[in-house]
Length: 241
Image (tube, rainbow, N blue to C red; front, side):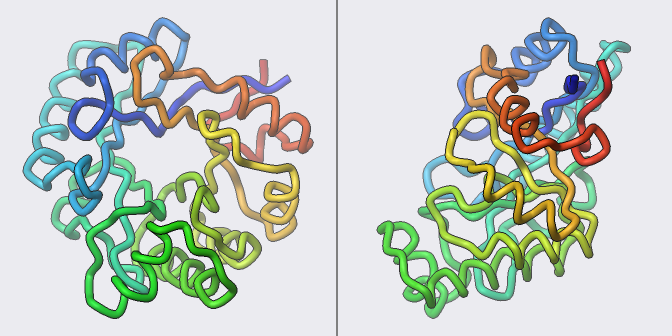
């Protein structure tokens, strides 16, 4: 039986979460977790992004709160956005270097890095258009980001934005980047896990909580991982009961 000791994808009012850092930490402690990451959205996520100044403030608060608790590790992080096909992110190297954990995901309604990307990548994805060439571009963007940066986790791969799972998993294996099994969105399939597993990728199960009460709510992800036959060694935040 697999149980989880960490939730490394949670949001607060620093972006579009409903609670504070301490609210999330309190729920994580209540649920018996020993590690939690605060990973609010990068600045180019339209309407909900956190500025780099706010991300550095988050860093300072996390340092302060880690001094208050000795029963849980609090990580300061970001869910950064890919802004162009070269895989550039919307967070500077200066800020990334000051964070404990870097998550990267493809999201709709992100301010693009250039006009070509806006027309051929961001706009069709935001409008829900899906075709073979766009799938290739999506895959190119996210894999280039993993190659370019020290990415700890790729969040909700394939959610609303079509990608080549096998190619992404292959790159993540090479770069020691985790693929997320997201417990909130309910879009994942066993086929996704099977393909990624065949390429040797490792996984992490996160809540993607936007409300404090959802922090550590990981049951759906655990059930899917168990059905897929994943072992503790294949899930970075898992432990044996």
